[in-house]
Length: 186
Image 1 (cartoon, helix red, strand yellow):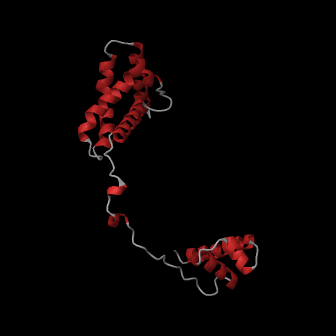
Image 2 (cartoon, rainbow, N blue to C red):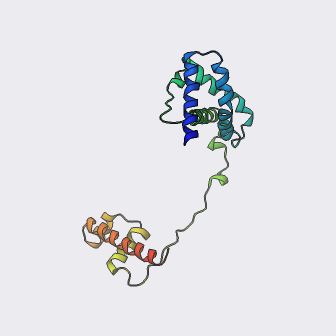
Image 3 (spheres, helix red, strand yellow):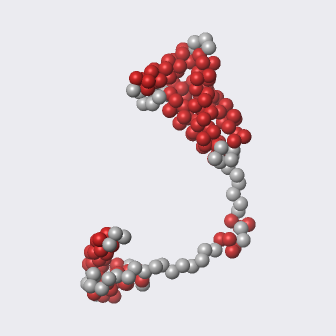
């Protein structure tokens, strides 16, 4: 805890020195915080296969920090985060922006052969409902809703009942099924 307060205070002093224009402040800031920025950028770019862009993005981060008389740095609030955390967020954002700007072009869907786009049809696996778990009417409603892909209004019309009754019976049937499956550890 003591070390964390020390790190926060140190970060705040670095920022204040920079903002007040102290001689050598920029050099000290870069020397202390470049490893944090470099590490955050590498963490995003290397897995994306863009290791050659790390130096450029690190440079972009430093330029962003300096731009408009340290406007971005003036938004740093040591009460919300440590300077290293804040720099990591800025560096990660710059890395993601770089990856988005330099994304490899996606080939047109028209140029992809049809056989690569097709998906084999697959029948859904139906759950066998144990005998006696649902009332005959609940079982019929489940059958009509799921196997025949009917709406509650269509089922209600077919059975001569209100669609709200269909929804209510559907809900109660699902509750029974869920309870049974939970009891069986599924």
